[in-house]
Length: 261
Ligand SMILES: NC(=O)c1ccc[n+]([C@@H]2O[C@H](COP(=O)([O-])OP(=O)(O)OC[C@H]3O[C@@H](n4cnc5c(N)ncnc54)[C@H](O)[C@@H]3O)[C@@H](O)[C@H]2O)c1
Image (cartoon, rainbow, N blue to C red; front, side):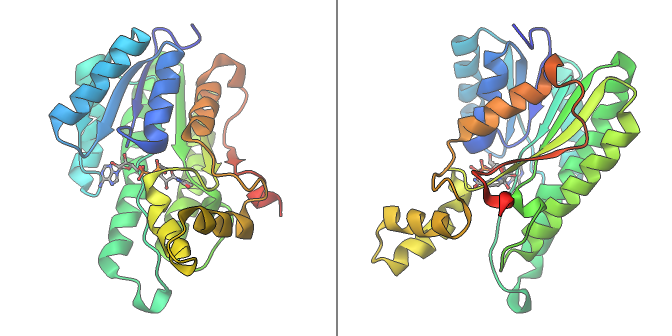
């Protein structure tokens, strides 16, 4: 299999896009360190399912990436369990929508910490062992909002644009060492993070969720379809393959045409 003998650390991988990424990498033969904020028994149960479904090693590490010390220790904790990661996917993220005048400072701080600073800490920790081995794959899950803007998303825009820039810089620093660093920029994808935005739209149509989703998609996403999280998982697996060894420093939209407009 394509990623047999590789070990992957995927942040925020107990649900949504992160879990789809973990499944896709395990399907390709990689051993997986799952990460999340859920209690250990819940994370361990998801790891157990990955092991039995795909026949790989899987473990769970709990860490709150809003806290710099936990973010900077995550790679070391993962390395103790399954060895230094060959693949790092920075996927954990949070959102809060609000105009600039009343944007809460604590939400700004949390979004910058989880969506941007955590990726800085984990890349800083993982690059030395990737350099030593002469092979590494880093995939950072940014967003279309790392490329273009929408209203009421100041902190998320700052974090995701920052993540795209940071990834390009690390790609250049590691380009001669068999390491690639790329971002994926998803459009609307069917996960928990966008439920508050769907609920707001649905309220305009008397609580009709399907109408709310249609309204959301019609504004920005030309294929008019919420992406299944697996669409992102499969692209991550491709970027981790040897076929993608020549791709580094890109911010790849997987967005149903959003950023083509
Ligand atoms: N769903 C979309 O439409 C969409 C679009 C573009 C980008 N994204 C990005 O995809 C990534 C995954 O999001 P998702 O859509 O699967 O949403 P999600 O809410 O289902 O998953 C977010 C993950 O981040 C983790 N997380 C949140 N706060 C954390 C913290 N303090 N410490 C550690 N982990 C924390 C959660 O446990 C969860 O696993 C995020 O970076 C998000 O910004 C999502």
